[in-house]
Image 1 (cartoon, helix red, strand yellow):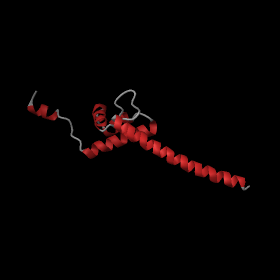
Image 2: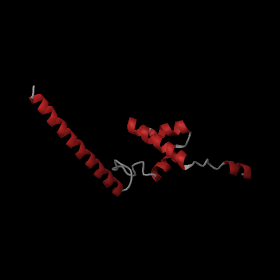
Image 3: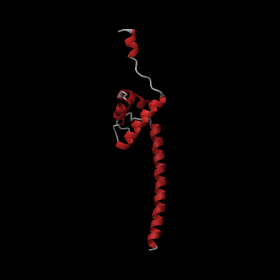
Image 4: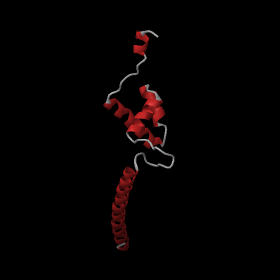
Length: 109
């Protein structure tokens, strides 16, 4: 193998901004369609699915195991569960207020 051929065999280097753009695209497609983001990004950006997979694993954007519904470590999952619990509690309070207003207005008819 000649030096010139070996030199050309090196892959392209991507900036952190380029990687983040691809990861964001994958997450957007997955959020919209439920899956297929990695394949869509591979076609759109002309990057190997294996390369994208590596980036996703490094950012915890992809579940690491079959039982994982959200990527990342246990502590990240617990933190996300806590955040979701707080959001649900706030929405339930809002809903209770709206129901109270609805019943008061309905009773005044």
